[in-house]
Length: 371
Image (cartoon, rainbow, N blue to C red; front, side, top):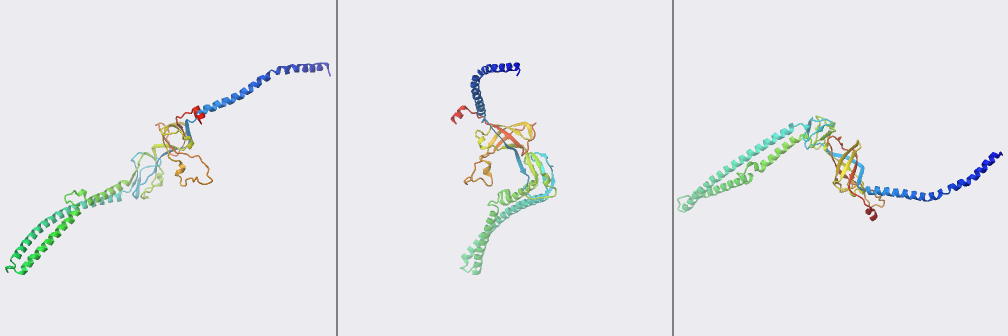
């Protein structure tokens, strides 16, 4: 081996102890640095988690929320032939606007018939009042006839024994009195019957008589049916499924014509978990975002909280008495009133939404310690 290489190896071996000697002081520093870093990391995580916990619990939100609106299947309670459809698919309508017109002819004829029946009823009642007054005059005349028959009978009875009046004349006078009395009683009964038909008073207004009121009710019903032959919008909204109805089609009573969806009364139905509703109450402010319109936020407030979960209204509610019962976190419907600015996009029923409810609740360390 060359002498230069031997000297280099010796120099390396001689320098190794010096390097080892210089590294030894770094070991004590690592001994305290590592625990500090570990404890510091845990402390930072704990502080961060505590901060998150203290700031959490104020907001309750869910993406199980959908836009809702008043919806109505338009129908009427009368039957008829569709004469005219005054709107088109997707058209915005105002309250009271004519939507569908049934053929009004049969209903107009019914009104005219009811008017004639009402007039005939009034004429009949007026005739009954006049007939009652005639019967009263007949009663007065018959009373005079009874008085005459009574006087004739009394005279005949006084002189029949003297022979001035024959027995036949006396019998005729006696039976004539009985006949006059019976006729008077018959007229009085007729007067009572006629007075009962007039409602107990011959001078009462005809319009208050039961027959008149019944005829007036039939006329009002005929007019109502004529009015209902025209279907009008009960509230402002947008019509849809209009093509399901065509002119000339027979529309039965209570048969839906087409649908109307409100544009004024729109809200959001949210279904948060029951565990998220601890501090939610009516009136809490809400922010709403719609999947259809990303980046746009609507403001609102909690209008009401359902008194029962959605499952309680199902056709077959859960029976938890069975042995294989599994607990499931329920969802409670929350209705949210949404403010709609004039320049905001239109909210349509069925749109998916995300809501965040500001309950205003704040957590404290005492809650954690107490728990």
